[in-house]
Image 1: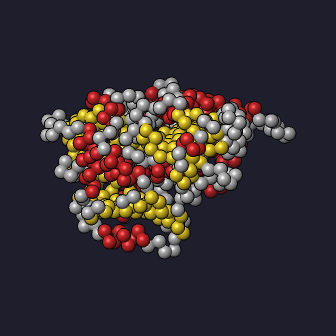
Image 2 (image 1 turned 90 degrees about the vertical axis):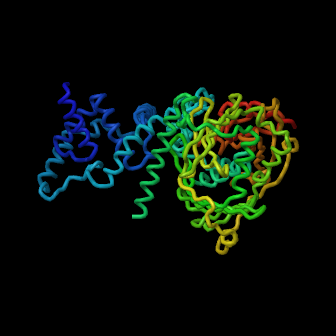
Image 3 (image 1 turned 120 degrees about the horizontal axis):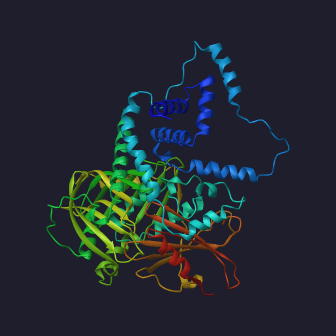
Length: 223
Length: 350
């Protein structure tokens, strides 16, 4: 693939992410993206960029695909339901046909949905920061991990038990500990104990002046 | 319009903070972007510094905006009012992020209002008064475990500040970089650094007005106006670790036991079973050990987690004294390995 083709593919993926494709074009790009490793990671990256534009907290990257891979593995382990679907659920051909009809009916009246990065004033203002924020968010995910904590491995091991809620699967990035802000489901009891620690555990020379402010500011912010 | 302004401010702060901390990933020696020309005028000892930092807010009235951000990108901010009158200090902290809440403090008395839940929590934070005695008694072990280095000066929130680094002498504690306003000594910015010198969390005034017209009687009135609020008072019972049957096999260097409490049981837990909180401190960092009776239903997962500078560790402790298993939760502003050392050293003595 030469540079021009690649650029065109990127534009198509961008349009796909923005929900601007329909009909045969949609089907073709979906097929192409699903088959091409590079295009797929590009698709993920565009979604990440969109997420970061909307909220910095969504800027966790690199686990979507691991998660999908794990989800797939786990789904295969699930007991098979009595009714087996033989046909692929998403048939690009049929999407294309249906869409074509729909488009044919109302093409004139239909406005395509706006792109996430449409040139509206606010997005423009934010976009400059967002590229920095994306860099920051990605670098943090490496900083946030602690090296060689056995607890992390245990977390990963215990996540193999299906009885444990979904959170461990999302959390368990083997041998690493995730910063709390990226944790999706938090243990309310742990929050309680952390609050208790902040209240009665502030035996620090830095507690007054700044420790108290830090705790009062941080307290409950994560709840 | 107002919101948009705040939004941009917050975003700028957040991105600025993140960038700064990204820069701080580079080795320690190059981390602070401090002009080398600005040589510290006075060399102070660690004890001098800590006393100066501690005394500063006792003489000043100020208001400002305080921003706390963690390495993971979480950010919280609050509006701060501070005033003092002889031996009385009052503070008002109005959270700008998360659930709305206002915290008022008069010396060690703290009231937290949660307007949405209509709950006001009152508590006495004993630890707030302890520190000066620690240093003046002359038996402080802080200089044994931390070194101090003055690394120049920098401007924060419009004020010239001395930058001081507290460097841990072992891997059991974090380091701190402190920005102290030159004239008053007030801490205007504080970073917590992990054992590799990377910033885990930073707290700073983004905007500060020193000698602001803050009225103590007005803060006192606000703190007392609990009408319409349900008053909550955490039920705490003082105890000792020995009385609860717990001991540390090997002391963790520098960490002294400070106090021990029994806290009310968690909801749905058998009545009479309380969580024991055993608190340790090395003078700057604090570790809490929480021990409760193991409950197969609730205590599913051992693990470790970090939130800013605060680390947590949970462990299932198999009892060998015939009184069942235990669930241990450790929380502290210390490296994960320090929590592990505590977890390994905890022993049932009954």
